Structure formats: structure tokens, C-alpha cells
Length: 67
Image (tube, rainbow, N blue to C red):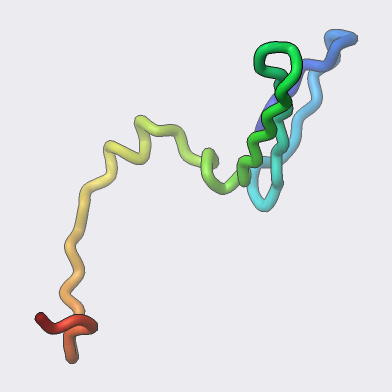
């Protein structure tokens, strides 16, 4: 769950999975920048992602690119 604190100090809980979050901010007073984040991109904490073991998979068949 993603917890957002509103201007009136209320906590709103939104599920991260399948959600699109848009964050807008102003840079230098004039220029407005918008970031779009899919909730699936930060569903797992970075520490948990780095703790997973890497398992190399062997792809059988013809190579996609031959030099």
C-alpha cells in the first residue's frame, strides 16, 4: 500500500499494483515538470530486489544475433 498524507493531514492508502502515480512540481517558478510512475515499478523495496539471487537462464535454440 502507498500512503499519501493530504493537505488536511488525512492519510489515504492506495494499492500500488496496477496504479499510475503522477507527480507535478515547478522548477524555477515557471517550468512545470511531471513524473509518471507505475505502482508496479516500486512494488518491491530496493533492498529486497538486491537480495534476490541472480539465476542465469540458458536459452536453447538459434541465437537471435549472430556476428
